[in-house]
Each structure stands twice: as C-alpha cells, then as structure tokens.
Length: 407
Image (cartoon, rainbow, N blue to C red; front, side):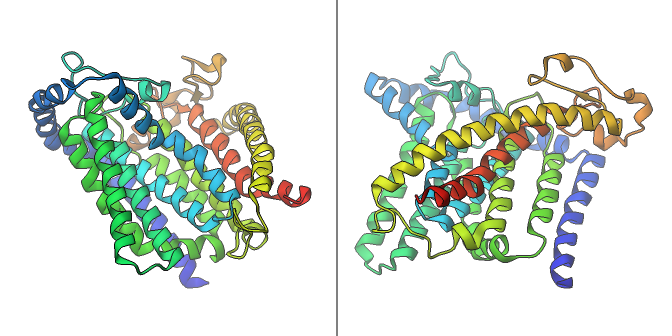
C-alpha cells in the first residue's frame, strides 16, 4: 500500500514540478522558436505536392476521403466506444478509451507547442464537409491527429484481435497488417487531398503514432490492472486529470485543441471511475459477449435503444448541473471566473476578487484554463464534468439498467 501511494505521489509531484519549471523557463515559447520556422518552411514548400494531388479532384474521391476522415475522427470513436462496452468487450473498450485519451492529449500538445500553420487556402483547396472538419481546420497542423489516431487505434485493435483469437496463422497476421497499413495510408493521403494537412504533418503523425503505440503495447496490461484492481484509483485519476489540464501548453493563438482535450480527459476519468467501481458486476472477463447465446443481436439492439438515450440525457443533465454548481463554488472560494460560451451572463466579465488582489504566481496566469485576465474559464470545468458524467453513465448507470431490464 505504501509503495502504491509512493509512486502515485511521485508521479503527481513530477507533473506539478514540470508545470512550474516549464512555465518559469518559458519552455513552450523556446521550443516553438526552434521548431516552428522549420515546420512552416516545409508546409510552404510542400504546397506544390498538395496541388499536384488535388489535380485528380473527383466527386467520388471527395466523398471517399471525407467519409474516411469522419470514420477515423475523435467524435466517431467517442460514439463507437459505448457500443464496444455494451457488446461485452470491456477490456478492449477501456484500453482504446485510454489510448485515445493519450493520443488526443499528446497530439494536441504538440500542435499547440509548435503552432505550425496548415496549408494556405488558397491556393490549396480545402474540403470541410462536416462541422467537425470545420472545427479541425481551426487547429494548428502538425501533427495530423487523424493519422496519429489511426496508427494507434487500428494498430492496437489488430494486436487485440490477434491476441484474443490466439491465431498463429502467418497469412492471417499479414492480411491484418496489410489492412491496417492500407487504412493508415488512405487516411494520410486523404488528409492531403482534402487540403487539411501537408506532407510534414502526415510524417509527424506517423512518427508520433508509432512511438505512442509502441509505448502503449508495453504498458497496457499494467494500466488495465491498475484501473480494475488498483488502490486510490479514482482519487489518483481525478488529480491526474486536473494536473493535465494545467500542464497543457499555451498555443500562439487560441484554438479548439484544448477544448477537445478537456472533453476526452473527462471521458477517460468517467470511464476509469465507473469501471473501478463496477468491474466485478459488469466489466469482468466472463460477461456475455455479442453474437453468443447469452447476448444475441436482438438483446444488443435493445441495449442500444436503452443506452443511447440514457447517456444523452445524462450528458445534458451533467452540463446543466455543472453550469449551476461551478459558478457558485468558484464565487464561494473567491476564484475569478468567466465563460467563453456556456454561461452568457459571464461572457466578457470576471467575477470574484480582482485579478490584482489574487496575487497568483506568474505561471498560473499563463495556463490555458485561465483567460488573459487571469480568470478561470469556467467552461473548462463544465466541459470536463459534462463528459465525465457521460462516460460514467456508459459503464455504470446504463449497465445497471441493462441488469434491471434483463438485457
């Protein structure tokens, strides 16, 4: 028990130390000064290659690559993961959730540290067929998140399937590897064709993706063991989630990347907290799995009909509750707050004590959870709690309903 508490404390203290040191030494700005000009140069010089690829413009290719971008996007995985939990593949679902959270955080941190532009439009033709793509276009370019996520998640899925089936057929392994490579290549090519990324972004996405996947394959069993049977799991993960929000680098200009991370940070916390509490009831390795006599397709469809409306209701209620509670708590504690979008009454205003009277240390004011005035953006907390509640309902509340309804 002491050794467990010791490593958890050391890990959290290490992150706190990094926050203080990196802010004091202005690490983000210095790294950006070194890397950004080099990346921007390659983005500019890579424009002729993008234009050459876009010469093959066709409606079919527009639809193909736009559809593929949606399928490998964070919102798609977020919608897909609940179904994976409810299908009985709990270990795969929680592993992919945590891996997705790691990919999202790492990729967005690099984006905002480097703050490198996307290909200039015009002359590049940029296709943003969905609202999600329009928001992605507001982020910085390097690395390509779609490429990074595809490498990690498709690679881990292949690893899981081969391990789960225990198939030693070399031809089957080769076929699976070939399919993963094809998906990754099409994803990278599609991001260039759509005008969303340059070649250097894709290469960086591949490199970072391979590093993260290799790391995850070496630690995933330890992480899963800690989540399902460790000590102080919920407390440790709550502290870790909070510190990661503060450790996030400040971009050159505001982008949606921090908002995306906050949402998935909340998802990861909700999943971990829920699974840790209900593992032996709903998520152990002996639970019924889809396409078996214990969980036929009809029962799984019933789960979807019950589960999807339930988590949407919980998401709405969590947001409403957070919008009501957080301003009250912040004002009680004397924390100055403002809201970018969620609470109209707080837009452009700061509540609580005046910034000059707060006597906050310099590094605190520079963190992305604070506005330029040194006020806490309450939208960050609302977003985190909203998605935490959503994820918790996926692994705790909804399975309880399944049990009650005998689904």
